[in-house]
Image 1 (cartoon, rainbow, N blue to C red):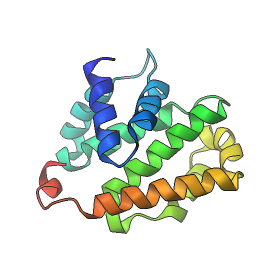
Image 2: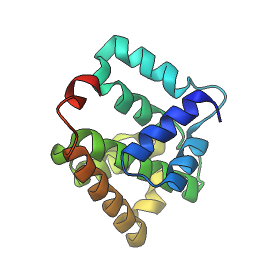
Image 3: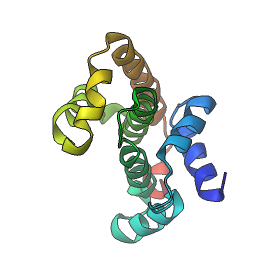
Length: 148
């Protein structure tokens, strides 16, 4: 595991994802042709600032990993995406909005996410992760508003 993968795993653990889920998400999200998490963070800092850079970089890395029909891999990537979103937006995060994003708005991954979104057990696990991460995100200190 390189420094970028370690940084992404650490960020995902901070969002409330378990260590094993964070490891699995990092492994599933990395491919040889995509920029690394740290390269993405550096690019986003220049574009949108520190506050949103980690969130956007993690979102890109995790979403771009959903490229095939591997339900288990896609589920862990979706779960990590839910944790990332809920942690970043805290009280303002919306579970139904995320479900809609994976159902309708991201055409290139909708067909890969459909089996997961039809499974009530997986939906309840996504909701549980969302709530855990949302609570953690709501408790972030005042400095995180400036430094991410």
